[in-house]
Image (cartoon, rainbow, N blue to C red; front, side):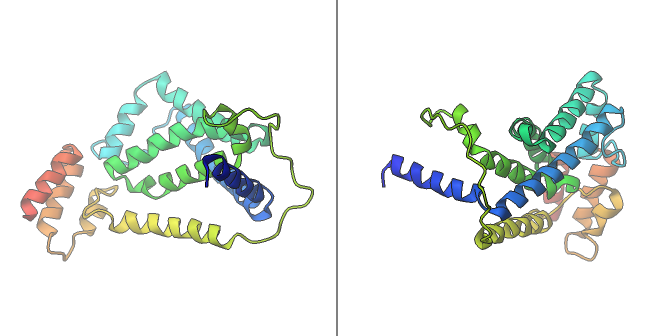
Length: 241
């Protein structure tokens, strides 16, 4: 199959999705949930409150958020950016703008959550990235005009179908649910040790395990001493071995 033939097949598949009622409902759900998350997070910053204020300042994520909270108008700017992205997602005519603004912010949150193993957004942030990418894919008919590999076309947007196709996309939702399950399982079993959000919950994961001594030392390192996460992980491996 030639490249042009493959492109035509993909576009046919895309337009069939645009005419499916269940995909249409799913993108609305994604918009509402993503907008809700960023509007709440944005308002916290605009009002000058520290996000996740319950985290200790020596916790890896807590230390980051505490420093971010003291960056003045930069902190407020992030709040307005999140609020704007959330509002744009709720307005039908500006969804694509909202999704484009949303992506770099949530992608940064995802990478940060994984880097410091923050359980508060370890599951939600990658799912939010995927939901954001789905919205961008849903608006591919508009997005393709800023991509370098598509030729010019007079058709700016796909026409709204007179009647939506009611066929339920079984395999699509199987993939969606499987992705959610995988993300949850990875958050629980993907790492040997997690700093958790408090000293108590951190130690709880090591109670009556073979690595209890090393684990307790790791938790004290993170939550009491306040050393960098990488140093605490190295100390954990040293004691464990």
